[in-house]
Length: 66
Image (cartoon, rainbow, N blue to C red):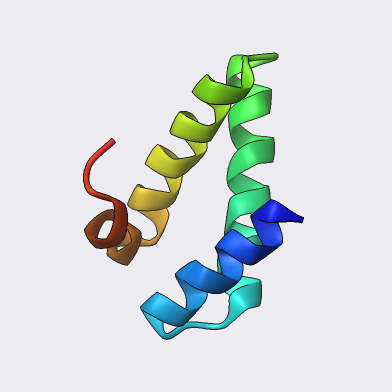
């Protein structure tokens, strides 16, 4: 899966466990889907990344502000 590979890449850059990043991403996706309902894939990715930037501030340094 592409999301697995991306989570592994982020985890290596942050120096944290892969499971932390992957679980945070899954939780963010579920939370945002419950809040905003069905959204297109592009908007969902942006919302998840924005949520993760608040959850794991180091991610913001990797990807810049969303």
